[in-house]
Length: 148
Image (tube, rainbow, N blue to C red):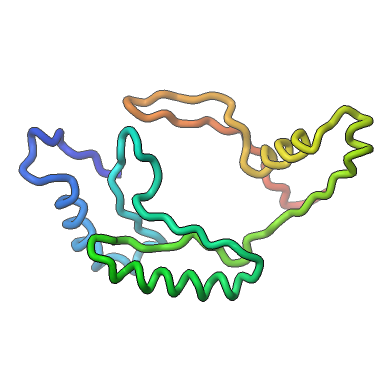
């Protein structure tokens, strides 16, 4: 994270500084697992300027389609840092709820889903406000390494 001098007290705009960092860090790229560049935007719009979602069931086909998109996107003037967020071997958990049994106990499918999500992603217990940033404090179940 790089904090810049206020824009009215510096000679370069943030994009120029970012581009300079990108060029200078290129020599060290092999020493890092991941390097991301981006400007923190305050206010709308939220999210990446360009985003493409590719959905389907066959991951091999999806990877090929994603490669075609990335290949094209890098040729678009002005687009930088083209990447995808696909992870190999990302586990999927499928839970089938017996709705009749759940209803008898007063549990909804939504209750089951939110509980499972909390187990994996945690639940926001509180938030801390730090300057102009809000940080979520999550309670997350520990990963069980040796099941009983």
